[in-house]
Length: 161
Image 1 (tube, rainbow, N blue to C red):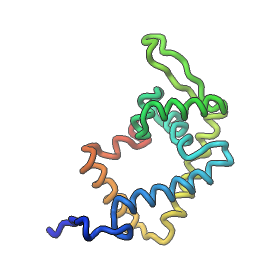
Image 2: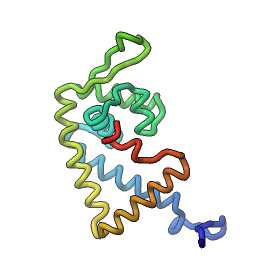
Image 3: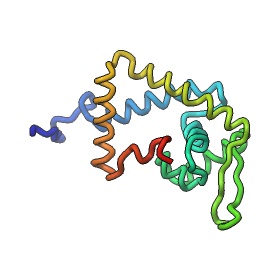
Image 4: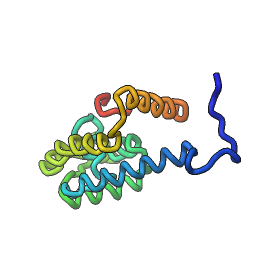
């Protein structure tokens, strides 16, 4: 098998996989930011709402892990979501060290609207890609995740929790 093995000399911004992945992610985040703005949310804020709505995850630590941010960043995000009236925080009765998160009716309504918005954003980004090309791209991205983290990305999907 002829494996891709770049060298320092062969890399440039136009064919550097890491740079391209980061740039593609930044483009997607920017468009998602614009798309969810009418809901009063930013790209970093919509994910916790969707996760709280469609999974069993309900603590800041679990959210930070699944969103792949540090707990400090998640706390700041949750502070903003709470100030906007999207979530409430409450101490767990069994373990007072644990904070439990709950969507408010406003947060629930916003979460219901987010997935169609994000779906449209993704469709815009993948415009012109055939279904087989999109499947191949997804397969490549999953392989990168598995190789580098040892985790199957499906274990972090919304339907698995």
